[in-house]
Image 1 (tube, rainbow, N blue to C red):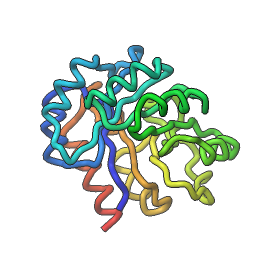
Image 2 (cartoon, rainbow, N blue to C red):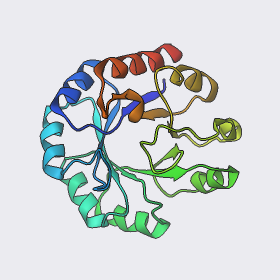
Image 3 (tube, rainbow, N blue to C red):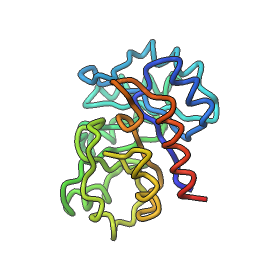
Image 4 (tube, rainbow, N blue to C red):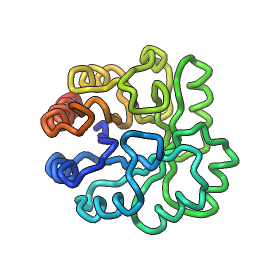
Length: 202
């Protein structure tokens, strides 16, 4: 069954909705330039309210590995998502500081990008259109012959995710802007997105 990640959590009310819907993952964005940025203190407070069956992912863009490892080893997040084109050397450095899983985001524009993703040293990979949270999809037809398990992100919403899951069978789907209204998480959109994914994998 395709797993679900709801990203960009910022408010306690969104965590309450998440606890009802029970996705597999939620995401906290630690990139300060993002409109969805949360501080480590805010993330910790939200994590304390999160159902224990849901894993928290931290989204980072070229942060010092020590900063990420502290959040992982301190229990604020369970998984790090590297979204800044981090190198193999960077991943090696982070691995030396923590044994927690690493999710490596790769921007997909052509088959060469998928080849690079297939050789990533991270535990998991995420395939996206760009910097993340843009609401735009890449050319999913490129995925036809891609055989490494991946998180599919970029341009997903309740209207297209069911077809995407049925056609490409990703390990997980990741959504942020597709479950928002007026820049904030929308409980109804969150619900319909989760239901669409589960309907596709029944």
